[in-house]
Length: 173
Image (cartoon, rainbow, N blue to C red; front, top):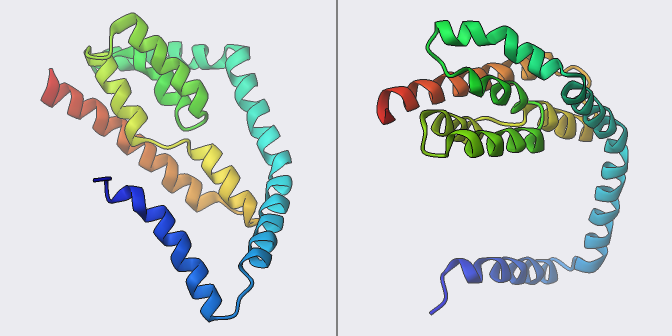
């Protein structure tokens, strides 16, 4: 017997079509209208996404990430935090693909089961690509003033990073 989840999506589609037929709604026309609105939203997000990708590329290519990681390395060492995770902690809120590349590098150099690998895994699992998410979602609904949301999201990422470090250090090693 198939897993229950196997039937969920087809059942949902069937229920939507059935409900729409009872309400005399043209499902295909509504689908086309939604697709058109989605396409317009996607097109309107392109300039914002180009700016974000350009900024991330400049951050990585200019060496600013390594410079900042070198700057915080003594602080990490003083706090008994592996300084190798600093670039990941900095990159994760900015770029998902960039942080994934850093995670792969950490795994290659230190192993996924090391303290550094465990902290890096926890950071990847508990943080968000904050700037990308805010750019896409707020850009989609044309919100310009993102100050409070940005502060809260960055604080949440900081809390997640600190919790990842403490959890890995206290419980695993």
